Length: 261
Image: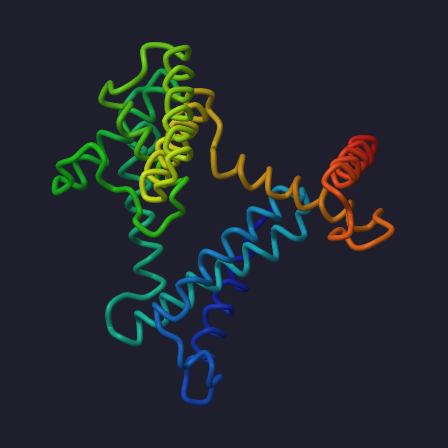
């Protein structure tokens, strides 16, 4: 599909500039990098929802919302004489070219494995201040994602379980330790041990090449759908049901959804 000289992109950048101008929108003029930082995360997750939905129309719209965040942050920075959208595009272009010497240079690679290994090597050269193998993990991302990143980085230097059986044993051991602390009732130790359980599960996910954050998002959606169907098929308030009756409702909702798939 032809890009039509990016006329719409240029127009959109101008629109954001107008919104931030003296004759623009009061709300937009008041915003700072910090005041809209949560929006970036929210729009990214909505884009993921659109990807999962399979709707190209929804994805196009949500990517526009993500683009708004990029352009708005760039406009704010431009007003502070720090950088603008052109600098953002230039920086990422240079980075992509630099990290793909097998495409834009003379380097020869045999496949994806070599591409990724070379990518990591170039990143290390770009960030010599990062002395630890665990450096570079974003502090503000969800803990589950951060755990996955720490796990992957540790494995790259050889810190790995010898086999999947030993990993399952580790998970079982952590569960038993949590159970013990739960019996004791010390909340701080329970939190510590539960963290170990979750981190072990993240390693299980990594071993099987599953993104734990996406897996949990999927579980959340599944639970929400089944629970809301329970509410629909119930003939009274759920609070009035016994535990056994709620379990029967849950099974009924689960069966109903399975027949729809």
